[in-house]
Length: 217
Image (tube, rainbow, N blue to C red; front, top):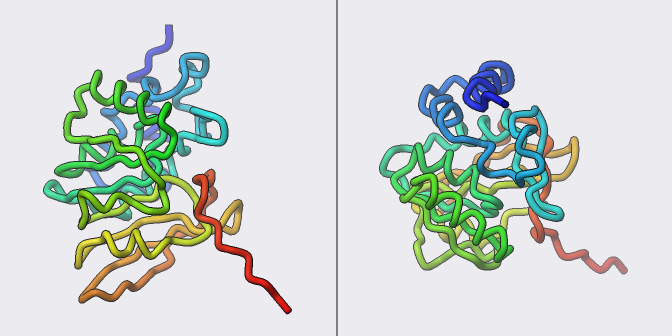
């Protein structure tokens, strides 16, 4: 029988604390949320490995270390309204819900959205609302958001997401694919958006978010 609580502590101590994650609130969230509840039953014993875990074809639960670094980068406050783009099975939404006032978790795959809704409700994460829709379009109905958290690598950030960011808000994203990926923090101030490169990382891509190929004469 696997002691998942012990595995969770080991994940935080060995995979997260060692990669410059120092926020007590973020560390506590990762110590509290049961990662094993958000992966398919067949891979539950592998829930705490230092790797991405497939939760549906082409969709992954992000490796703990980069996920924790991205969450820390967002500097989420207790009254913040957060939009998570690409919630998958709901694990990151549960983490975000421990830090934020409320979370809107957007998912394009209706089956994954239903799974996330059921798991989050069963575990009592009642400040998360899972919604379905096009990831690139964001979710304007509940905008503006204090934080937009993009839960996978993308080629570019659509203007629709910046438009849904509150003035003073932050958008955290990994841009690029494979080892060329970069974690970036976007800040909106006075209607203008600035960006800052923060660290290199490699995470699995979200569907869509591809730039249209330009025709070259």
